[in-house]
Structure formats: structure tokens, C-alpha cells
Image (cartoon, rainbow, N blue to C red):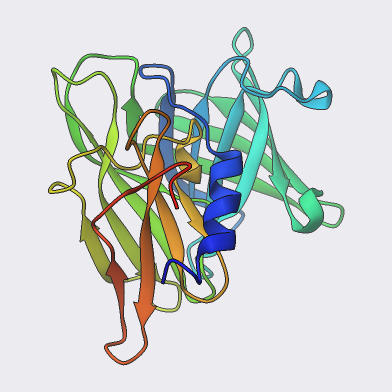
Length: 250
């Protein structure tokens, strides 16, 4: 299994970064884009993007059309003075496929979605939020992950203990894209090092490769690492290796 995931693990290590606790707010919404039900989530973080073309960007997230269940990348700008959000839908080749023009409030997002050929009204309501800035505890905050497999997508279940310094993914739901039902769930409570909080972007705690193999970020060692997950064809289920692999260790 480790041999099959060598290149995948290498790619994960190259883009992984050490996490910093207490720096992000995440908002989960559901509602309609035109007549299409969607699930949309984003987090706001000042000064994350280091690219010159994105020096003003402070929003990143993911959304999906609920009949398709294929997560789509979102990047954009939140104007704290006007409460306007301009979010770009990132398509194939990292090109902008469409743009959300939204009016932000904690309870609701309204505005439009525009592409080269269409313009649709947007009306979304808040489901819940995750704040890692607060010392307050929370549990069962479900965050859509951006990476997905051909037939499955992922939802991280996040929690934070009141005495803890950072949020963590205590479980991962593997969702069937066709049925939109839970195919399998992994619980990380018995893994000593926290899972799902190494990537500074909360939507990037999964790294997919070829087939149905994937990695889940884990805070093992000095700079973090990952958990290996493979698919057992005979048993028709995913198998988690509960031993985290530290970055830089073969």
C-alpha cells in the first residue's frame, strides 16, 4: 500500500504546511442557485494568498450542486466594509468558470451567480459555522472537502474541546455521489495525534490520487503527516491505516 501511494504522499508533503490554531472562521450554507439546490461553504482568512494576482483574496471554499455532488473550488474577496463577497468558481485548468456576487450576512447570502451564458439568483441560508478563533467547544460541524473521488466525496466532521487550542476532524464521512448517502465513516478519536488540522485551508485536508486511494492530514511529529486510506475491492469498502505517517519518514 505504501509503495502505491509513494508519489501521492510526496505530493501531499510538498504542499502541506504547519497549522496555526485560532485563525479561521468557516460558514456553511444551503439553498438555491437559480432552481438548483446547492451546499456552499467558505472560510475567511486575511492575507492567506501569497500570489501577486491574489494578494487581496481572503476567501476560499467549496460548493456542490446537490444532484451532482461533485465539489467545486471557490476563491475570492470579502469586503468587510460593504459586506460584499465576490467568489470565483474555479474550473478545469484553474480557470474561472463562473462568479458569485453575494451580499454577506451571518444568516443569509443573497446575490447572483454569473457565467458567460447564464445569470442566476442566489439565496442561501446559514446552517452552521465553525470558529477556531474562540475558546468555546463545539462538535459535529460538517465541512465539505474540496478533493473528491470519481464516485465519492468527503465531509469532515469537526470538533473542538473547550480546553483545546485548535479544531480537529474527529471523523470523516465518505459520501456516495450517486445517492448522496453516507457510504462509510471513519472515526479518528482513537488516533493519538489530531487529524484534519494540518492543512491551513480547511477544505484541503484530503489528498486524492489514482483510483480510490487517498490521504488524510494528521498532526503527527514536528510538521505533521498523513493517514493512508485504500479501497478493498473484495470487501467493497475503504480501509484506514490507523498509524499516521510523519512527513519526511519513509
